[in-house]
Length: 165
Image (cartoon, rainbow, N blue to C red; front, side):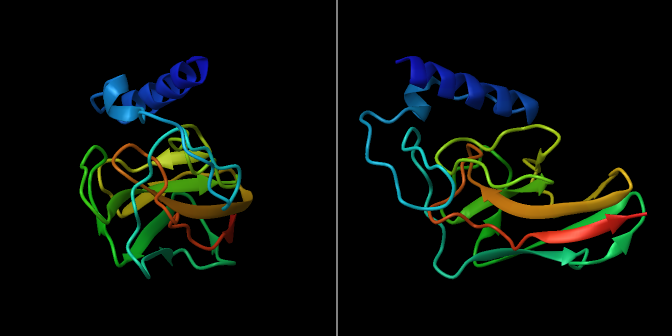
């Protein structure tokens, strides 16, 4: 029960950060626990995960890996095999982008955190401009479903490294 409360609290924080209505515990918690999946970083079976479409992928259109850029950094997200929709839209084979900055992948069975390292695009954006400190930075994309939970299997881009002047 304590774990369920912690998970629900995390989900509510993320949804509030994206300006969405929070689901009730009955809408977000499974009726029974299942075994953890053997993939990626630590995987939790705490919340159900949406299925990704076979062969789907996410990738950076810009910037290119190894690029030297100035501020603001223009980023364009690419996706094939699935649709981009606003967070909260429960539609098969769809989701919204999350930009991971200078961090690794989060737990796949929990909502993607919302902080300076995990930027949410719950409005369905496929491009953005961000300001980063000068120096080298790693960027990676992760698609999240209507509740900001990575799909099964997760759709993640390759990690790219850029240098900001």
